[in-house]
Length: 291
Image (cartoon, rainbow, N blue to C red; front, top):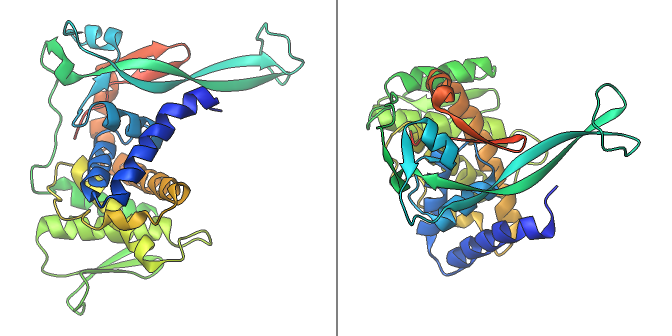
């Protein structure tokens, strides 16, 4: 659980985002979503902190992790403060000597740690990872495979007139004849509806539902290297004067995007997992690569 001191930087970042949206600066929210695409394994709070401290960051890690990769932090660079979990075991009777078995419980707290973006380092080039450059390529097939794994049927139809896609509860319909990039984006959008908007706790507002789905599609497209310049144009509609509601939507968007991205980039993630990590107590700060 976060202490008040630990919550403060995240709260300040959320306040800054909410204030920007109140001023009509939708680019701030779109920038947050782009940061989420690059750091989808990180919490909403850490994404906010990275974006607030170094907008445009692409790959972050601690000093020791960079050193293991043959890189070192440039002199005079200021670190990016985020939070990493520390996990330890405590006996249920309160004795602090650890142990194992049913008489222990796992405790988790967050610790402020310092990471640096790759642009703040120099040395050996990072390994290149497969990614799409304007064409979804293999990722469309992987997205359809993800849908099948979720029990969601995908159909392509030329009967859709006013919409490019439709989510019908267990079935997604995509308009025939779209460009590969549009097809991928629409499929991601409709799958987001299937993941987010089929439960009792779904947003009551159709605008909120559409905006959340479009935001997920934007993040997923960004994560695989697709240009999605207009996909998040209306993301400002997520905020309606209530920061708690905004945070809830950001959390929902993150969870859906993480699930989809994790499924369609499994092979790349397996390669990246060997890139090194810095252990902070019992928590780890991984090198996070922009797709």
